[in-house]
Length: 89
Length: 240
View 1: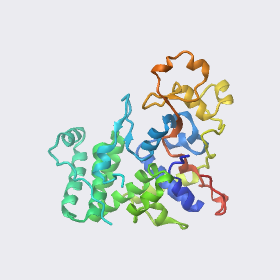
View 2: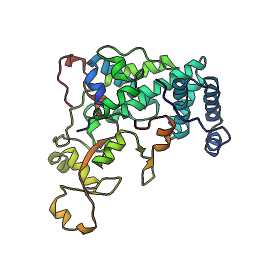
View 3: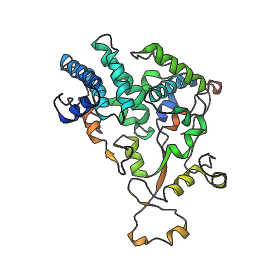
View 4: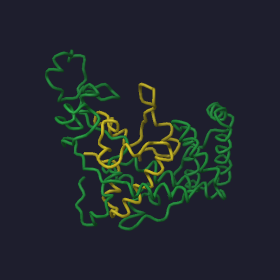
């Protein structure tokens, strides 16, 4: 089962994890994302989840594609990935 | 290890012209990235960080993101700050959304310096660079005070959530609620969930359906809110 970037969760002590998470959320807040809507248990709310097939979920976690608002289909992430040298080894 | 990346589009390309029409500041920030790209030619790892910024500007989903990246670039002291800024966004924006644990072994060799696990293992993360540091630290400090632990979410766990009428939310797990909202389908491919209730299946022409096993995918990674409570201590067993 997938748990986001649980690699970080497994390896940071809570003080370091709290600091790391706060940085991540601060960036999101600067990007105008209302992070208060996702704090704590609210991260498990309908607004933050979607139903994905297992393979599509895996591709999403690897940033192979992303969603755009008002567009009814996915945009491929491959351009950005290629650009940044994120190709799968 | 050098990780090659693809050069940023030149300033006269169509996409950049469109961005410049939105706000000339965007173009000037992008031009700084182009100048740095030239300056650090041959230094692949530095180029990569510069290009992260350039592509963040180009591919920003909205003006809020583009303006923030622009502001960060403009507040640089010198060009090595631009490299650090790219590294900052990789560490705190790209990486948290990437790399499920299953591919950790594959990622390790390609992510030596910036990989949080390696960098931060068992100790406080090294001070992070941000160009407008005091205000960023203020935002971050407030968030640190407010951040709350989230319950661990297994795909079949009955986690009660708000967002639906009481009748709904009291009797269904998040997974089930998401399935109901999404018509028991993967929102990308439209494939039908294997365990769709028979009364719903009865209304469908199953010969025309592709069946799949679906999962409940989080957009903001739930692990951002795992193990953030210092009271938990170091010896807490982490699920996963």
